[in-house]
Each structure stands twice: as structure tokens, then as C-alpha cells.
Length: 116
Image (cartoon, rainbow, N blue to C red; front, side):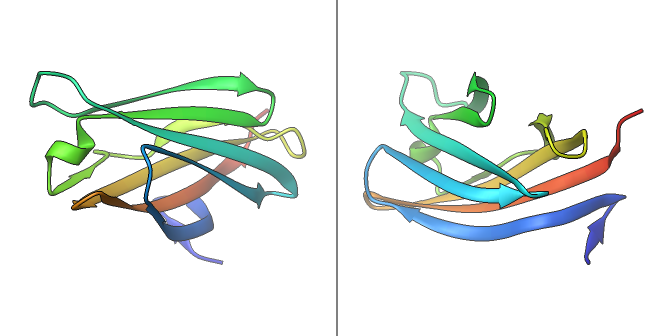
């Protein structure tokens, strides 16, 4: 088991996205989850990230202006949700890189301690 600042590393992967959106499925703490990624562009140069829960085990993440930057990343892990299996918080951290029309995302899903 690998711990990063008291968070347990559950999943670490990189994916290549050839479209403006992609969907991944994985299992975190014996709980299947789905994460949808969508790249969006605006006239501004600043990057941002937002996410919403589509349903109980499905999150939708929008990455704004990440394709305008050669590399972008989150400043720190963000709370994505809580598992239904052991009531542990799930955190996500992302690094992204645009290479032409291909986007590389490095993803880490981390687990916190069980909630009281």
C-alpha cells in the first residue's frame, strides 16, 4: 500500500483521449465508479476544473481550457465523493498535457480514512 500525505493510493493511471470527452470505469474500495471527462474551451486563457455527481457512483469532470496549455494540473487532491462500501472519502488529482489533438491525463484516485 502506498500512502501520500495520509491518503491511500487506490488507482493511478494515465489515459490518452482522442476526442473532447472520455469515460473511464474502475473499482475503488470494492465500489465500481465511472468518471466522465469533458474538455471545454472559452475565450479566456485561464484553466479551471469542475465536477458534478451524475448519480451515486458516476462523476462528470469538465476541464476548461486545458487544451490551450501544454501542461495543466490540480493544485491538490480534490474531494470527489464518498464510497458506499466503507464510508471513505475518495479524492482525485489530475495532471494533463495537450499534444496536438490528443490529451494525456495522469489520474490518481486516493482514499481517506473511514468517516465517523
